[in-house]
Each structure stands twice: as structure tokens, then as C-alpha cells.
Amino acid sequence: MKILVLSERDDCCGPMAAAFLRDYSEKLEVISAGRHPADKLPGLVVEAMRECLIDLSDYVPFDKATVDLSEFDVIYKCPDQPCPTDLQTCRDLRDFIKNESFKLFRRLPSSIS
Image 1 (cartoon, rainbow, N blue to C red):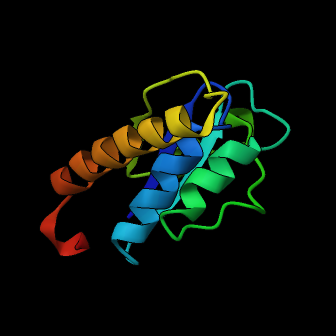
Image 2: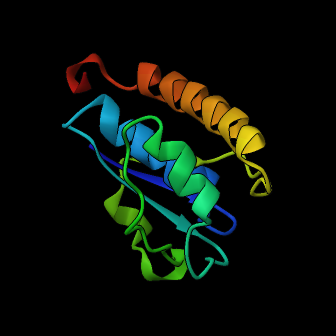
């Protein structure tokens, strides 16, 4: 199953949500993209995700305009939150995104898990 996670800048919530979804099942092909993608992920996002054993250090934000929406089974609009400027707030946002991603995962067909 192919999932596209959409966000505004693909610099925080979208990449985190996509990473968690990929972590939940090897049967999922998940990418994230933004309407106005950032140049790179903030270091705080990379650090917060590393604490969950997910490496986003090489992640490059994608532009939604370069993605063929018809290729995806599910398009998930990620909650858009500004990227935090301190590590604890980034952790809190990461945990929120992890929970939201898991809710989405639980709604997918049981054959995915």
C-alpha cells in the first residue's frame, strides 16, 4: 500500500509521520511531501527522531508538485505545526505525530500489519 503524507513544508510533521508509518509495517510504502518544501530538516527533528531509533539525517524534503497523486492508495494530510525551536517541544510534537500516525495505521486494512 502506498501512502502520501502531505504537509506545508515537509520539514517536520510530515517526515516524522511518514517515518513512523514505515516503521509500523514493511508492507507500507510511505513518502511525505510539502506544498512549499523546506531545503532540509531542522537538526532538532533529526535529533528527536533519533531518540526513537529512526534516522532522518539524510532526508531531503519533497515538493508535492513532483508527486503523482494517482499513484497513492491513501493521502494523509498531516497536522501542520510550526517546527519547534527547542528539543523538548520537538519531542512533544514528535510524540503527538507518533500517536496520530498510529491512529491512521490502525484504520488501514488488517492485511497491512
